[in-house]
Image 1 (tube, rainbow, N blue to C red):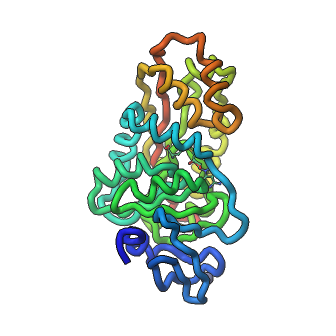
Image 2 (cartoon, rainbow, N blue to C red; image 1 turned 180 degrees about the vertical axis):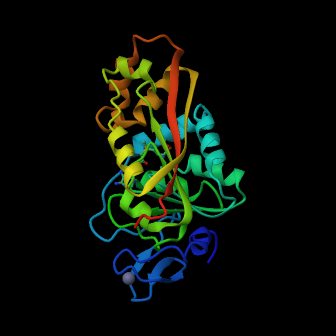
Amino acid sequence: MGSRSAALERLSDVLVCPVCAGDIVSVSTSVVCAAGHVFDVARQGYVSLIAGRAVSGDSAEMVAARDRFLSSGHYDRISDAVASAVPTASGVCVDVGGGTGYHLARVLDARPDLAGLVLDTSKPALKRAARSHERMAAVATDAWAALPLRSSSIDVMLSIFAPRNPGETARVLAPGGVLVVVTPTTRHLSELMSAVGLVRVDERKEERLALQLRDFETIRSDRLEYGVSLGRAEAIDDVLMGPSGHHAGADEIAHALSSLPDPVAATVSVVVSVLRLRRDAG
Ligand SMILES: C[S@@+](CC[C@H](N)C(=O)[O-])C[C@H]1O[C@@H](n2cnc3c(N)ncnc32)[C@H](O)[C@@H]1O
Ligand SMILES: [Zn+2]
């Protein structure tokens, strides 16, 4: 069929059925496996490959904030850093917790022979991801469950401010494949976080270490830090699209930020790491 599933169709070799792990034999208005399990492709172009109960992800309000904020370009240096960290020109790049697909679309622009796949649980995010790039497909998947991907099939996995599943990542990465991880440092948006009463703790440090020690080795790790000037609406969106958005709405966040100057100077501070499977892993 037409554009609704063209990007999905191109990925049918790497996708597997979430129920039986069997091959995908047909992709059109639905995705069908060899055993006959059927998953409808939504009108907006994404498909849900979740075997059990669907988990929600970012809300519509958070996703709209992310869409507005990312299109301002304030985080483009992050996607540029990710694109230049991707060592391969072709193959399949999967963005786990990829949200609206903004960063992956910029990676695909930089790498015209890569095919892209966003995995996320948020339907409002997937709707945007499905139409954000002609070489990108969007699939509803729970990052904590078995990923509906063939073993040893994926050239690049991205995890940008997102959950990740080291065991499944190790299973699906192809030999020589890499995982590119972006994590915030404790300085990330600290000016805004202290106004909303949050101190960012580096809760991922241990997880990162575990990831490195078990199946992966870090081949590169660079800190990216720069200042941005955010108007009030942008500052609200930046907080709303992050973890605070799960607990507070725009009005509450606006109130918390009201004592800050407008525009406010904020720090973007992340670590971009490239990890590779250890040869003896698995
Ligand atoms: C902080 S956002 C980052 C989005 C995107 N990587 C970006 O930087 O624009 C985290 C994303 O992870 C998704 N997410 C949360 N829990 C998830 C899960 N269990 N499986 C897959 N995605 C999940 C959310 O819906 C959200 O889109
Ligand atoms: Zn099946």
